[in-house]
Every structure is written in structure tokens, then in C-alpha cells.
Length: 102
Image 1 (tube, rainbow, N blue to C red):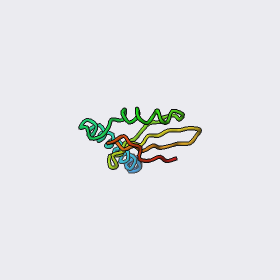
Image 2 (cartoon, rainbow, N blue to C red; image 1 turned 60 degrees about the vertical axis):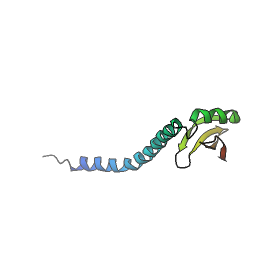
Image 3 (cartoon, rainbow, N blue to C red; image 1 turned 30 degrees about the vertical axis):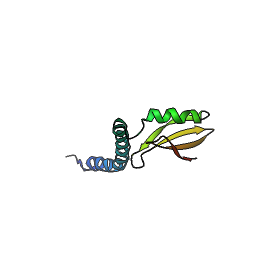
Image 4 (tube, helix red, strand yellow; image 1 turned 90 degrees about the horizontal axis):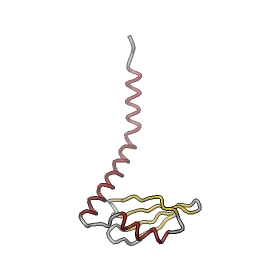
């Protein structure tokens, strides 16, 4: 008779190892959904509006994308130039740049 214990134990361990990653992904998805809801309600600017304001100021860098932080109500745009990454933080309500980091 075969023992299924090793395969069941392996499956449980695999689930435990992926659980933290899934939680982080859920937070990102939650922030994206929150951004859509807030933009539809008129509380924040849409990502396209933010990009239209910021991208022209960073024309010599390659744009990599953005993330929305629902707690700070801010977009973080990511750029790369000559191997250096730059983040531009933008207030989602006003479109004003609130920080840059390299």
C-alpha cells in the first residue's frame, strides 16, 4: 500500500510558501481597485492624467510604469536612465510631485 503522506505534506508546504506572496499581490490588486473606485468618484486623478503631466518632464528616461498607494493617495512612477532607476511620487488628488528618489 502506498503512503500519500509525503505528497500531501509537500502540497501543504508549497501552499505555506506561496501564501505571503499572494497576500502582497492582493494588496497591489486592492490598491489598483481602490484607484479605479476613487478616480470614478472624482476623488483622485486617473493614472493617464498623471502620466500626461509627468512623462514629458522625464523625456530623457524610459518609463517603466506606476503603482498606486491607496494609503498615501499617491502614484509612484518608475523611470530608468543609464541604468539608474528614479521614482517620482505624485499626489493623486492634485497631480503635484511630492517626491523623487534614486
